[in-house]
Image 1 (cartoon, rainbow, N blue to C red):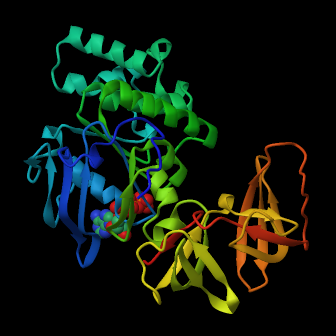
Image 2: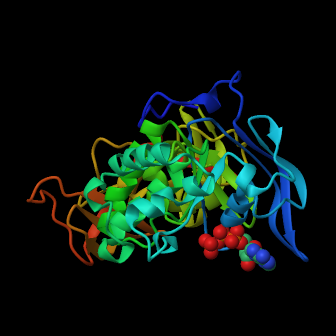
Image 3: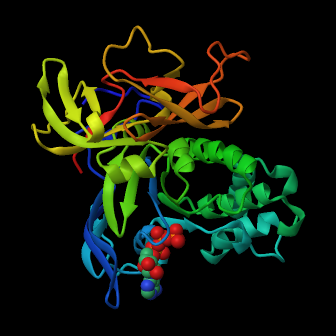
Length: 380
Ligand code: ATP
């Protein structure tokens, strides 16, 4: 596969065949009565990785975290941490801590007492506790709020206290279940970057559960996309977006147009896909599919160009239709085009300048076009 570039940093132990996973789920199944919440799932997470479990409600994300933390045991299979089978080890003896949401702070205790709580329980000497709490307050930039109670803080500040409390005991792995769920959108975005900085500076392994794809894409080194207790794909955010392995993953992350058809034949430049009503698509890569195979050509809206005239520079993949909806989002405009062969396509265009050279409006005839390498061919 073509490299999609290093977006975040030069950290990719999963691509190194010699690297040993830090956390391994090996054929893990979890049943609640007759119901299978996690189904024969295998997954590796590496030391210092920021790993996200992403999936719709009920797909088994929290169950995976709870088993890793020790609040639940697998029905079958094993979970290894640094080579050690975790079965039977109680939560407090695992080098793992779970960050609960901000409302789990003790309301009657000050910020510093909240952070010190777990350290006191471990009977750490007073002077060490004070030093550790001071470190933590500095880390989450709450030094001047040490004496306040949780209700005297904003939602974002409370979240940072919860974070400081959960890393105070220096766990090797921090598990975060919807950590930013209680925050509004703007604060969420800020806190995402704070979490990433914190993870980097502490050198911890983070496993975060979220149903918010943007959040997973922003923060994680890799994402596991789950459905009904099974892993659909594990990959970097860029791979998940640009090289989804299935219709499910393509449709789950971001917006996508899906052209269904069959491989009509291989060409020197790749392959041709034939769909209903005379639709043909030229693709540079058939994804290994033979002629006759049913496939979907998945293409993101921003990779499709819309224009009022047939583009002169695109030889393949130019189709005519009519604009029937336009969503102006400020930074970009999304056009919904009903193609003459019937399919509706979404195409987005960035509003990089304040004046549009080729203005298009409702009911206009329009062309959509895209190069053969703008989408991926999916067989699953
Ligand atoms: P959400 O995003 O809604 O929190 P999730 O992906 O974290 O969802 P889980 O909490 O892992 O989902 O639950 C997975 C499935 O297992 C759900 O269908 C849930 O109803 C079921 N489940 C979880 N815990 C139990 C339990 N203790 N007893 C019975 N069923 C359970």
